[in-house]
Length: 183
Length: 389
Image (cartoon, rainbow over all chains, first blue to last red):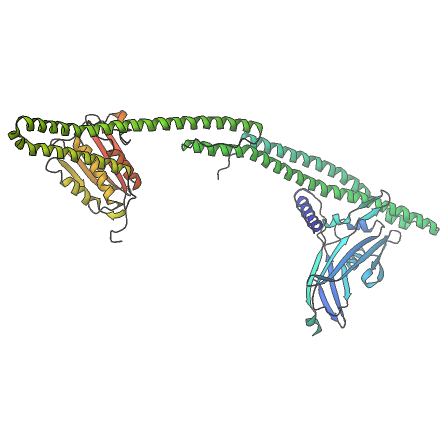
């Protein structure tokens, strides 16, 4: 709780100071509104990361190092955690072929694209299939995204990619009444 | 609230401004240098150059890939170092400004709070409360200042107490003297009359019957004087809570003047239909006391001028005599209890007037010139309400 509060405080401090004194642009990452589809026994959750990879990310992706965009999905009912799932969208650039290899973990698919915009579109789209379990009725779905620290072999240090998101995790929340979806 | 910046505040603000501007300049300089390094990296397009090379073996490709990866990592490092520098330097700048601001406010509070305490304490002393004591805390200079202030207030408090005791003693002495004098005045004629009666009764019993009624009359009169004296003291000692009522003061003033018209000359300008919210009995006592003083210095040939008017929300009763007037040195003392220049006076009349006016939220103003007479003005708030209410 305190750590979360500290993170929020730091993120706000960064936003204010950058706004006041710095030419740093960064990215104001956010999710589009979550769209839920009922597909028989499954719920398909769809959303999209917006304004997340516009400034400064091209050099990061084109460094040839693997960049992981992590997603954390939590399903709660009356504040009780029913399900928690972490998954990633990974990108690795091949400088010789100038192609991006994109791996979408929740869909277990790998694709290769040459265009930077296509790659950004691929890693930004989230489509998660959620099978509801017995006893679930009114549920709250929470999805956030974050970037883990990237290790640098040449310096034995890690760089915090969250800096490019101004230390703010984009968050998307939705409350569902599953009975309504059944009908 | 009026904000006035002192020299100290301006100095601290200037200091803060200089620090912020200096840091800003240094920050811009480093940013510029970092930008130069980043641009140098960005200008080199190793990726496309390498991709155009025709590597003969897979080993060559792997090596080239590794080299490009290392180069990419370097670019990321420089890019991120640049961005981190931008972000963290702005955060540090904001923190320094916030911290400096907090320190500045604390310093200002440390300086201004004791000064506010001092100002309030000075106000208390101005109001006559010398018992005020400041807590000797804060920075060394303030502690010293507060200690000096406390010494001064303690000294003043001691002097005030001594003065109060001395004043009380003086009042008691004066009161005793006045009471002894006032009681002695009627007692002497009573004693003389009784002695005379005794002598005549022993020497000429026939004459005794002739002078007896006159003697009894004198004794009764002096006893009446004594009774009046005690009543006057009693009135002064206990002034009742005013029973406010709305009435026309003209009626009361006319009623009082009426009983003296045969012996004295009055010039009046009394307006009717004026209303005051006042204790009627108190008003009667006030007018009687002031008028009595005017009568004491007037004859049939020296008229007493009385007017009753309204001005700026006040009903003003003016009583002016053409008597001996009051000495300028005595003018500020005439409302003090037991202060009197008359041969037969308790000094309670005008003191009673002042206390009654205070109780009814009225005021009194006096003008006097020796040989020309005195003028008393009684100011009472005019009432807008109707008497029926």
